[in-house]
Structure formats: C-alpha cells, structure tokens
Image 1: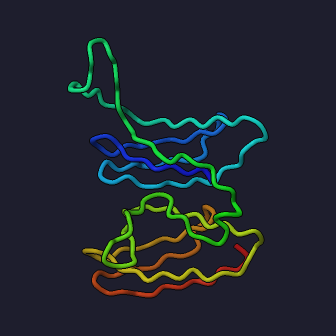
Image 2: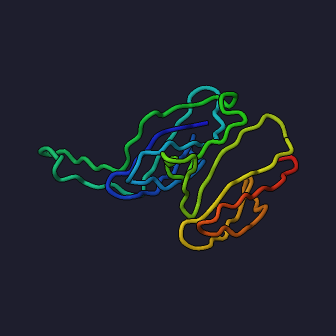
Length: 169
C-alpha cells in the first residue's frame, strides 16, 4: 500500500498517481485539511518510480525571490510503503472522506469516496454501515472492485443501518 498525507495549496486539485509509467489512481486533494491517502499498488523487484501529477500550480508572488520561478501545488508528508500484512482486515479511508468528527465516531464524505480493504483469501463478508445524509435524501451506489453491487437511499437526520452480504469478495 502506497500512503501519503497531502494538502492542496489555496484550492482543491486533481492529482494522478503513476507507478513505473502506468496510471494506478487519481484523487482530488482538498485545500482545507491535510488527509492521508492510500493506494493499493504492486511493486516490482528493484527500483520503482512513483510520479504524482497535479493539474496545475500557483505562483506565489509574495514568496518569489529574484529569479525564482517557484510554482506551488501540493504539500506532501509521511510518504510511506505499508506491507499488506500490516493492513490486513482493516479499512483504509483512501479518498473522498473528511477527517473523523471529533465529537463522534463518524466521517462525512463528498459525492465520491474510496476505501481499501485487504484480505488474504476470498471470504464471505457483510458490509455494515450506519449512515445519514446532511440536507436532502441521497442515492448511494456501492461498488466492490469496480463492479456495482447495490444501490440504496439515505435520508437526512435519520441514522440508518445498511448491511449487505457479499459472497467471496
């Protein structure tokens, strides 16, 4: 798992992640709070080249010294490779999630999110979510490994428990 903490400079930015010349993911990085992102990647033996490509950058006039052409887009920290054994059977909130709310044990998401769950063998599993929406009813589509497996409606100010049994994920 390739992991990093990122925050965008002054405005949200789209970022593409390439590994050894192949696109392995994309994400939108927020300008408000740094967030840790996770990508499941297959590393080759020997050297591996990660390339992060932002859709633009901003010249910060106040920070430019003489002929410096500094153009800022993203702040990165804690760039890490995590062995799969360390994240087995854990949920990694990878993209589209806000930081955990301090007063409760929940996370808001935007209109798209991605999470990673790594298991060694195919298993029977139940996806369990206690969910609500902020202002108006929303339709949620649930995908596993890129395949749409269900769709359901979530209502505001009403906690709903949703569960779905998966056979051999």
